[in-house]
Image 1 (cartoon, rainbow, N blue to C red):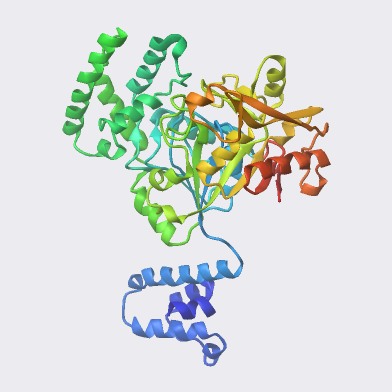
Image 2 (cartoon, rainbow, N blue to C red):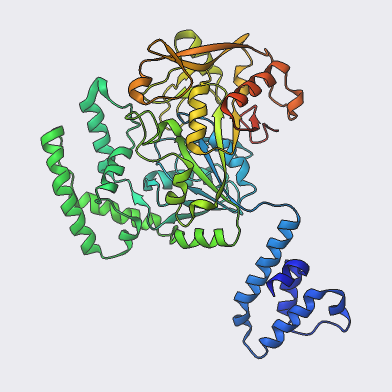
Length: 502
């Protein structure tokens, strides 16, 4: 039956005929073989109530819809959008752009410690936790179980969208996501204060203490808020007994109030109630149904807990492979396309190794011209550290992600330069290397630079690759060859439409 539908049916036709429940006019079945199938379905279900046909109706419609999409050349798959470097690569714009062709966008890791800046018809927005599909009404936006969920920030972000004229998006929060508690933020601040000059440059969003608690099995999953309150109080009491011992004896601060924390959990329960769902099943069903799913990562390869510049990394895995875990419901083999975002120069917020970093007036000029209004953190507002394009780090970052294609961003910011240095290798202890070493060795690396000619013109507004200045194309192709992954998208401005496809 399904085979026949794939060959002959249409979604609209199946819907119409299943609702009709009457034989088609004489001779019509011979003209459209799908009608013969529908008559068979109706005879087999004769006498059944209409609602019992609904599941079969939807299944048949889905088969036909998928058939039509296949005929039209529409690819249905799970895609991931991730960063190749230190974050701040421009993932938000690429996600916002590709979300228009998606059914579902899922944030799968990280918290509100970094943001994606998006400029579209509604205006300019900095998203910290919400998936970048929230500007499209036909998209289901999911905060996955791998996210460090700050309820306060979630509520604030949703309100900022509404205040900006964005219609209320479809948002779901995984019942298995864990909550960033107020004491996580306190501990983040206390520890940075204690470390002084040896601090990690934390955004003080509570991320490291949150993940520490998650893997120590003393975190709060969203579903716990909707269960036994006495059990919740008991768990909170046991947690705070240890937390307050640390607060008193290590940091010398005031104890955390158990009542205030429980009241806060009840506030979270009320705020989250409209959004909580068993997203694992929803996502898994979407995969089986052939929906287009976009996985959205935070930060980049070099901030990954395992593969980044440890210990100056974030506290979660920033790689596409983790999407199968942090999104929930997606088998690893279903992630077919990994779009890795690379900035045309380098930038970073926070401490850590940064071989191609530049300083002084040179850095300030690039910082002022970069991004969509200067290179400043979307979450903290801190000036980003600046550097030239590092092809050693970028090649490594793309390998870590398993990149299938690259989106090359913020190319327009380099139009003021006569010459553009590019880091093509490292010098380690007097030896030239082309691989990205572990942090202990990375600290001793110096950049090996090659200087390319600039194009000295504004490239915003160009939509055809061949219309770019010759030196601009050479810059792109030089980077592409070194990285070894196709550069399929070139971003030459901050707006959604500022994109060139290759």
